[in-house]
Image 1: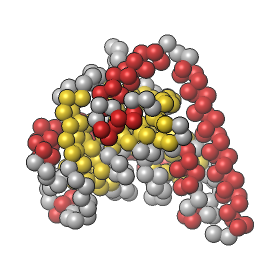
Image 2 (image 1 turned 30 degrees about the vertical axis):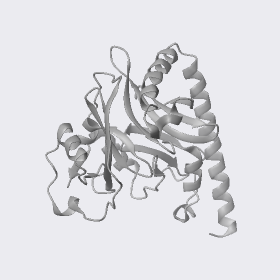
Image 3 (image 1 turned 45 degrees about the vertical axis):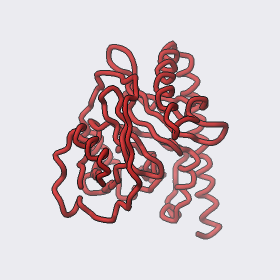
Length: 287
């Protein structure tokens, strides 16, 4: 990348980063002024108390919480957990019709919609010749439909995966809208309180075999997935939310059972726990 081209791109990335950061601060301040913050904080106390009893999550108990709304119409919040400047993990919380909150997903390590990671992703050579506008838009429909939309001066946009920070160059506004409209809205009926059981298996090479190409998907239930993981089975999860434009492949690393609701751990840089019911409507399991 030449210096001449790099400077405008870097400047645009800084402007974009500043715009996003300012917007998130303003949204967080508005959220903290609402009476609902007290109830949400109380529910977070319960979830963090349960998780921090596990050795891998012990540092979550005293973590600083940074809360911001996911966006209009989601009735959800992103909770980023930090120790000073060091990210510990994140949680997604949804308001439940009739009162209370549901745990939408959670994971250790870098959070969703990490602004520093976005800024780094925008330094990619693929964006070298693209004039960026100065505002990024976080968009969250479901755990597998979480992206930054980065507008271009031309009026089109570049999409960046909000978890992996991967550039989704095959994705357009049209394919995003198609994927978003295909998601069936699922309003959770309850809010789990107790982490009653957990299990994990050693990480494995997701490409040691490719059963999503050679085998039929499992007729999986939450109980059968939990039983197979307890037996140490290697299970893959595959999802294609963009109709052939981008295939997600994960190894299943374990589970957490919350009052009978199974959260499946997808093996990313660190496990990402997502409700079995959510994953079941978005993709398939393989062995």
